[in-house]
Image 1 (cartoon, rainbow, N blue to C red):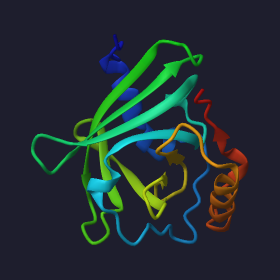
Image 2: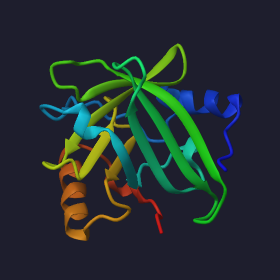
Image 3: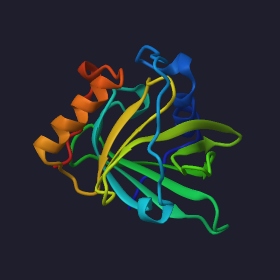
Image 4: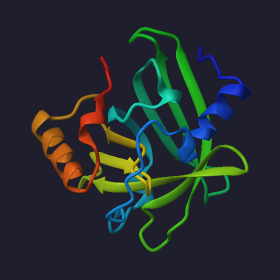
Length: 181
């Protein structure tokens, strides 16, 4: 059975979207570009975190997953983030939020909340042709996640993604691989 997180943890998760809470320095130049188009229905489902910038709200998180599903209103997206606490066989931590598309031209910019009425940016900045991987950040590049449909990613594909992120002014030295198995 999942241990649901308490309200205090949800409040802490919310603060991830405020720059003052970021552990990575802001990099606003050049302006961050998102992918040209996202088919939200293809994006829905389970994603495994392959790597991330370190952040305080995911401290001691292993085997991280994110599940996206269309909400009952048919418009919003329910977000369920889970991780194992402190070790791969640790207790499951869970945070539930809601997202909505903030740029209908691309569907690549979303706003996510884990504590209404406060929202944070969720920008899809790279996406596999078959939606087999995604890279998510925000305009100041203070947060970064590499996601995959599988718990592992081909090393060559991962290396190429990291190389492309370096060219886009991400500090790849801060990127940490997430233990999944």
